[in-house]
Each structure stands twice: as C-alpha cells, then as structure tokens.
Amino acid sequence: MKHRLAAAAALAFLFAAAPAAAQAADSAAAYVPAQAISILPLHAAFGFYAGDYERAVGQTVTAGLGGSYFSLGGDEDGFRYSSVEAKVRYYPSGDPLNGLSFGLTAGPTFLSAESDAADVDDDVTAVGIGFEIARSHLMGVERHFYYGYGAGFKRLFMVSGEESGAEMALPTLRLSIGYAF
Image 1 (tube, one colour):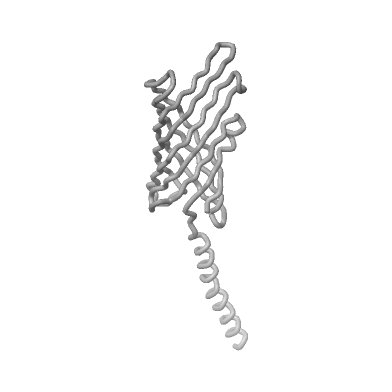
Image 2 (cartoon, one colour):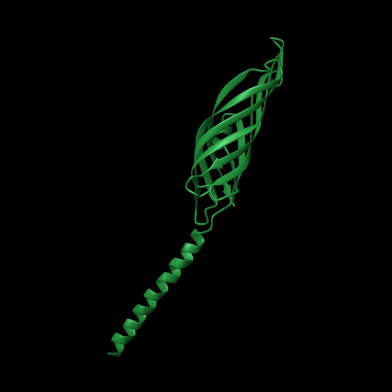
C-alpha cells in the first residue's frame, strides 16, 4: 500500500510540473519583436544593393525606410540608380512583421546615365510612389530571424533633368532576410 501511495504521489508531482514547463515555453513564444532591419542578399549578387528598416507603430501597421543602389558600367560609361523610400505596411492579421502585408512607398529616386562615346550625361531626379504585397516571417525560438518576400510596382514622376515631366513604371521585387528586435 505504501508503494502504491508513493507511486501515485510521484505521478501527481510529474503531471503537476508539466503545465509549469508549458507556461515557460508560452512566455518565450509570446515575445514579439517590434522592429526589423533587413537586406536583400540575392539582389546583391547582381549588383543591386538594398535594405529596409521597419518598426511596428500600431497593432496592424508598420512604418519604415528603405534604400537601394544599382550601378551598371563604369564612371565614364554607365548607369546609376539610387532611391530612398518611406514605407507603410498594413498587416490585416494584427501581427506586425509577421504575415501578409499591403504596403505603400514614396520617396526620391536618382537616375544617372553617362557615355563618353555618345556624349551623354543625363542626371534625372524623380519622385517614386508605389505599392507592394508581401509576406514576412519571424522565426526561431525568440523570433529574431526575419525574412520577407513580395512584389509590387513603383511609378516614377520625373521632376528634374531633361526627362522632366515624363513618367515610368518599374516592377519591384523583395526577397529580404534580417534581424528582428
């Protein structure tokens, strides 16, 4: 009888301890980062350098900044593209930095083309306004690993240079990895 009572007490102790361990795991999983910094490493393989900073400003909205740079050719014969954008993303699931998002972007874009052979030296400044549909994920025990992918379009309105008044549309592609904190 003593052995049965001791065995029952030991089982009761083991089962009582199980919810405490689960609660500890839930508290670690409950941590949600409020901001992320990321780069686009696949784009860099082709000479297009870009990065983003994103911060939750509400339960369903984030705000951030992005920058990109691309150069084709050298200083004497080449093309350069650079932009800085403010970004706002809406996460309908209520989990910022994680899940489907719809975003708006706006900011200046600078284009430059030079060719000694054709005697071309064009510098154009444009205002870019765009949108994107993306999906972001937070991974790891503490949800610090961030990755996102998405696509959209940006319309450029030329405001200075020989192309002033012209418009053009550019597709955008986002494949980013980074750190959430």
